[in-house]
Length: 217
Image (cartoon, rainbow, N blue to C red):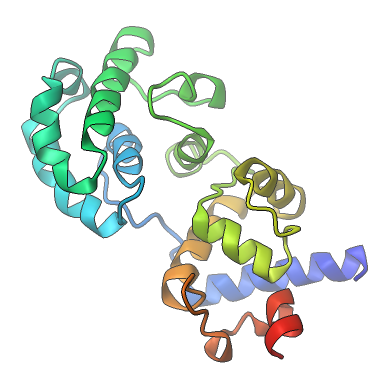
């Protein structure tokens, strides 16, 4: 496939995903930037739906970053117990709150280097914050849906390494499109291209999908 054709395919995939999922937004509910940060932490090994059920009570009990920074970790645990791995998550939430209050002026950092200093924050979470909160161009949130579907489409070489997927997608996606593109892949991964059984026959990305052309079509 020529580079020019590949670029055309990438743009076609972007446009079709826009048509399917016009909003292209994160499915986690959050009024405040730090609430998104902690919701993403809670979503590890847990569904966004479950996190959205848990966070209203947590953030009602601890309505400010300062209150979370001073919270008893064991009390935070009681609010987030059903999300799994609750001890580590509660510890990270309180420690990250404390760090943001003490070192970052009570704000969520706006750059990768500082975000990665926060307990429990990796590149996926940091990129999500940079994209959704600070609207930084070119961010790629390489979550499981993004990794799986970008590989099937042939946008990456099929690697499961998040850092490699991030780098490969950055190289081909228009910077202004990349963040919403990743959100749309998540929506597509839940609705059509599921991990257990992708519904290829009803997928409108078929014309540009390497997996469909090779395995199904």
